[in-house]
Length: 319
Image 1 (cartoon, rainbow, N blue to C red):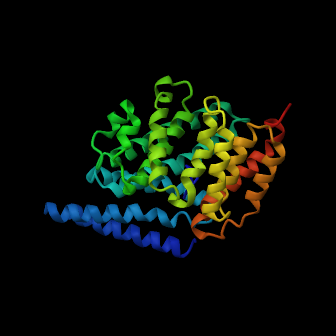
Image 2 (image 1 turned 90 degrees about the horizontal axis):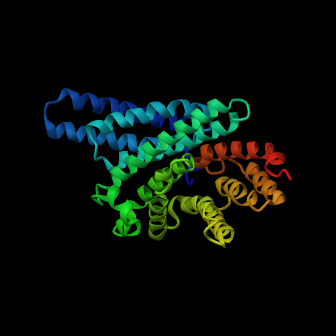
Image 3 (image 1 turned 30 degrees about the vertical axis):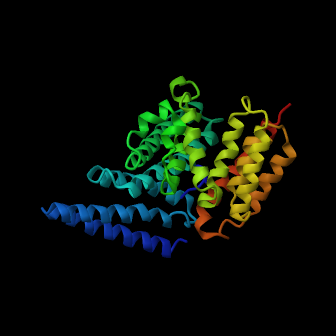
């Protein structure tokens, strides 16, 4: 999901439980043995298992359960990273996990409570910003395992800094860019962070060039919103956003709610097109969230967003 990709009960939970048990055994081996090579092997096995564990989350149908479980999972991953700081797969999993958690369970919640508690909403947005920056930093660390010095170089010449990235870097380029963009969206009053937008664009454009179909069009979904954020600079921003929407729908077979919700929120509101806005959101709500088990959770989250947006239509389109 742009940042909209998130997190089967029964079998999935059983698989996750088995992975956790495997991690526990491997961790005991890590600390019980004095042999460095054995310890490193065990740590790599733990990292591999944890990096793969998130796949069971996406098919879960209990959004609140995942929201409660995600922090523990993320902190466990961070603990293993402290011992094995260059595990690229785990760095990617942590970066992606913090973006997904911050969006689905912190940023969206801030929007939902703002009318009743402005201060609490502000606090949640500030927390979301910090989580996004943490995700960005993990992503940059992972990219630097194959692109040394990227963290500094990308602020000097963004396009050149990512030019040597290969298709094995696509996921990291995407998630690092999404995390950075999300942090900027929560920091409009921080000119230094806003000045990093060229780095965001370089990361995401390079990911698009390497694999435009990555994760069933996740990059295109992100670019729907990103193009509209540049509406003041690019005259054809809405048309560009719609082209990305069309491609995202094509790549997801029309079974993913995120493209519809994103176009409604980013383009329909900006163009004052209430009819299209409501049609897109109603379409998202009619989708069977379980049609693609691996998208069950993200579709549930985006359908929640669609309901909330529909409930605010009168405000959003007030004359």
